[in-house]
Image: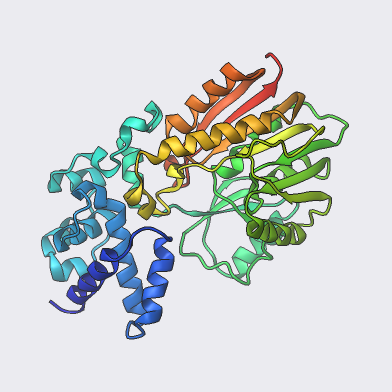
Length: 389
């Protein structure tokens, strides 16, 4: 059967010992480091087979058979491929058909690709969303203010193709190599198309001659803080915190590269009972809470494979604690942005209703950013205002 039969056999072995405790990317890197016999072409094909399986495995009941591996490869590719030509010429002949046609040929219902569809809001209960798991989303660059000419020149000089999404956002193929082309975070920020829209509510606010006192309470590596900084420019007093000290070190490096100087940084666990501030309140709080990450599973399909619905209760309890402590630090008429990269109602609309019933806040906006329509991630934001509406 040629090389591709051996590639399938290797992928079966790699997948069989993978338990999801680390990203699939790291699992593959460790395997290759221990098995030097695989050249660059081998690694590329084996990785492609593995990712294809995790993208479509739900449709086959997560059963690890060679036939299911081949069928997964068929569903996730649009052009003829020597793997299919060697192992199943009939599938290779049909590979250019639509996903709907290919699923019908295999006798698979579209929702089988995403078995947790009962947890979704209605806007996501459709074939377009289910099909999105079969493709890797694009990479997106958010161009920083005043840097568009520089970014465009560098893309042109390096012959990098792109799609202009809007004035300050471009889409690139996920295989695009950007190392040594941009000064990271100075000229442009790698930030998903949906992520860069979660603070759009601020664009409708009248300008104020003030310094906004801001707290990014689950900052991660600071992408939302940089977005807010660019929207309000230097008119903010920025506080950033996260439970992970290591990620805050990375944030400091990003801020330095981006030219963000005036900020306070500290470790805080907002699931704890103690308030992080004794007598301090904020005009704007960004609350990008830990969540299932279900809105990003097209990028990391192994997380869909290993997700257990029981984990949702753990996430929602944590989200309630974090949101509760964040709201306690919101000034009168201040704004709190509750953000998730989840598509589950339990982590989004249900948390919003819980907050409205428990605290003196009003809901200004509630919105999903349906990245599956843009080959991007999916996100949710709710904007609360302290005090009655």
